[in-house]
Length: 470
Length: 41
Image 1 (cartoon, rainbow over the protein chains, first blue to last red):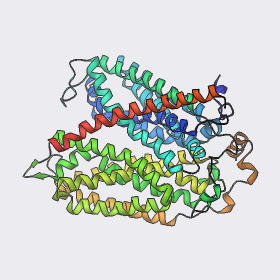
Image 2 (image 1 turned 180 degrees about the vertical axis):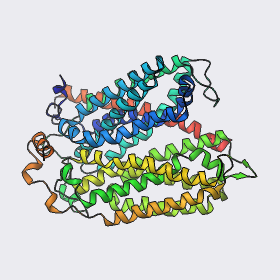
Image 3 (image 1 turned 90 degrees about the vertical axis):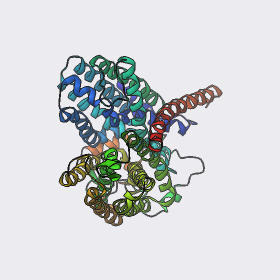
Image 4 (image 1 turned 30 degrees about the vertical axis):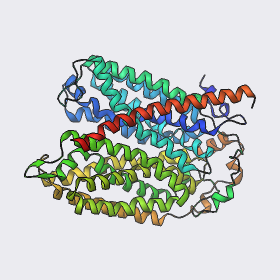
């Protein structure tokens, strides 16, 4: 039955609008972006299971680790089977994750939540994240940054949708729950219905993506597009490199370092945002920034994180991938240094600096598929992207470790000031400097890694299978 | 592509972008309401 979802059955007929592909990709990314909204019901889960912060936090960690692993392992499968089957599989895993998780909540079996949301949901995350990437790049050879920026913007937007929606659903299912009161927790049955509602709702929305996504016919190109105009830009190749060969190249690992450094620095701020703004403006033990205002700051960062994905990735189509990463990393270094040195002088300045930094963080995620396309061609760009996302998993561990490690040495939470953040922020300047140098060292991929010309076209399925058995 | 196909595709384009706009719009409006607290508290 799944063969109806195969790549060969999803080739677009003549006249098919390529503008149906971004909303198909967004339908997936807006749903899986929910993973960054798990903090909304974290306290309710802790109360329901009578478990520790760590025991509940592990659910999110398993999901993120599975995202990186499944994207890396399933990348070649996604390329071979096409976006429709990948999106369908992602929707099944993602929805099953919620449903198995709801069973765990209903029966008070925490391990079922680990297996459900963490393991199954995490596989849905990884497969879903990479599923539309190579298809978008093939439909938009003239504007790959814009296309992937639109989709990956959806991942940032997904948390913005899921956070308020989850609060409102929990209030609906448990009228005694007050989301404006930090100490209020929702009942177990409200959590069960929240998970069931989200699982079924996301499955339906993801099916929009499954129904609309198509791969372009062999040799298709947009009206008026001249491939020579793209190939004429520095670092852009017309050749193709398989995923198996890409990981043998120096440029792949340099790009891995670039992504790792950019994400590590961004996560450092993102993970600590709310207490950070309060600590920066603390005088005589009292912060001038209220808890509600700090929540507003986190919301503002989400907006800039999302907007940066679209704006900066689209800009990279004009100025090039390498220069835009020089901006993310180089200007980022200056902004981090300013944050450490003068961030405490005015709230507006602090907010402005942090917002621009977070826009670069989002931009780094969204621009990387187009950078990979430039270096390795379109042949297995989705699979290569999947392997590169292991940098995200690694940065997810390194970023918070760096910041929390320094802060733990400075004093107790609630007593820290701007000075306590300086060592961590200057470390981030160093991390960005490493990424900056790595980006400067990125070079075109040597010809010995290129696929033979005949492997680039004709029967892509066969070609993918051939490289997968190497 | 036939006229029917073209009309069907137009409808599909509108519905797809509408679903995305509603979802993203909801998220952005809710987040702006939250973010406004930064300037009002």
